[in-house]
Amino acid sequence: MSDDWAGSLKDNATIECDDNGAEFFEVEINSFMDEVIHNPDLTFPQGLSWGYLSSSTSGALIVAQLSHFECGGIALSLCMSHKVGDACSAYYFLRDWARLTRDPKLTLSPPYFVQDSLMPSVPFDVPLFSPVIEPKRIDVFKRGSLKTNATIECDDHGAEFFEVEINSSMDKVINHPDLTFLQVLSCRDSSSSTFGPLTLAQLSHFECGGIALSFCMLHKVGDVCSAYYFLRDWARLTRDPKSTLSPPYFAKDSLMPSPFDGPLLSPVVEPKMEGCIYKRFIFSESKINTLKSLVAAESMVQNPTRNEVASALIYKCAASSSTSNLGRSQLVLTSNLRSQASSQPPLPPTTIGNMVTIFSIPIYENYERELRLPKLVTDIRKSKHDLSTRNNLQENELVIEMLDAYKTGKLPLQQRNCDVYITTSTLAFEFEKLDFGFGKPTASQGIGPISNFFILTNTPDDDHDRGVEAFVNLNEHDMSVFKNDKDLLQFAIPV
Image 1 (cartoon, one colour):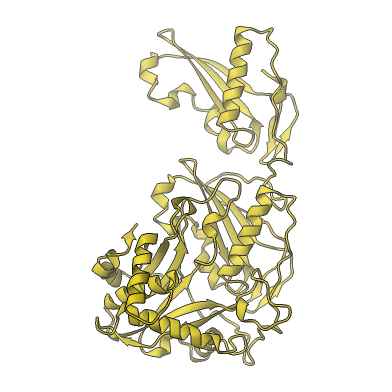
Image 2 (cartoon, helix red, strand yellow; image 1 turned 120 degrees about the vertical axis):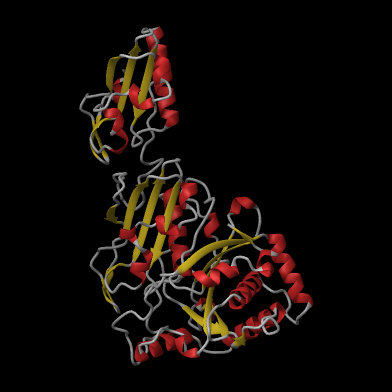
């Protein structure tokens, strides 16, 4: 065996040059090969390194076994720790071993081992983690943590990163968002937490070989824009650790001052998903363009946006599907305030902070004649224009709603005496193009914290389609009607 592999795993991230080398076993199996060939567990007896090498934090880097069968057949089994190699590495190891077996005097080129400068460990000096079912946590970005509902302490606890293995194939999990973030790493728990990390990330490895990155940032310190630029810079550093990045600019209290009767000592919004059904719907680019043309032809709205037409249609169908006794509804939309700040110099788009507000369209009776798509888009555009004429940094409607809810003990927007639907959009951010060195994501998911909540995202970049993916949260009864709405299904495909 090659001296280049003459080492062993000391801990989960360290290889010690101790000359222990690869392990080789030669065994006899009291069976014919044709009885074993479809039962791979028998080719490596229980108790050897084969079964636990993939998750081991110590021991050999490579295990090989030569099995002799009663019929005279032989089988060679090989296992290489994924901490040091992949299928390509295993192939060239076996190829060179085969060559040396046939001709021991053969001179082979020594293997070239990829160095950390080429493919660094997880960025920010984070070592590899034990790939076990129970996640292992570690601090990634040494910054601060939430001390109370309104205080961040600079204690160097930083963000938390988990790396886990999931005993399932990705296609079984992709439509079940609760499974991508394990219970111990619940975004919903963190959104209402009054202590702990500001940011959580989890890298999940699936049985099929696929991986998924889950990410959650506390809304107390950031919004979707903050999350996007955080992930974008992380991806850049992963691909090139020598990249020079502009330091993040954190929104200051002088820009968005705390309210006079704040800060809030306890959470206002408690995540509530009991009885809530989550479903995904895809609007292709061609269907979005058809919606735009329909709205433009029957209203005064010029160049309706993807966000406007998709939000209006989803709200229309959801309100029509409502089983509530209120009989009235209203759509609330979110807006990024960074471009509205009058600071000098202007705020960069990468500003970190919860710089969002909300605006609403009028309250509608849940009747077909009221919920007409062109009228809804017209009202969205008008409300958006009205928003641009106000000083939303000083008089933020979202802050006003939160303070009112805190004082009255009711949920935000609950005093409007109607069913409230909230939509938020990430269409302005290219999450679908984020590349951590593994290529662009083939799918993405957004999880809302409450019922009557919609999230709009771009469809995967590989589709070459500027479509919209909608994540819809409704209660079980409303969803049973909504998912079969003929107007919705005319433009959207359920996933």
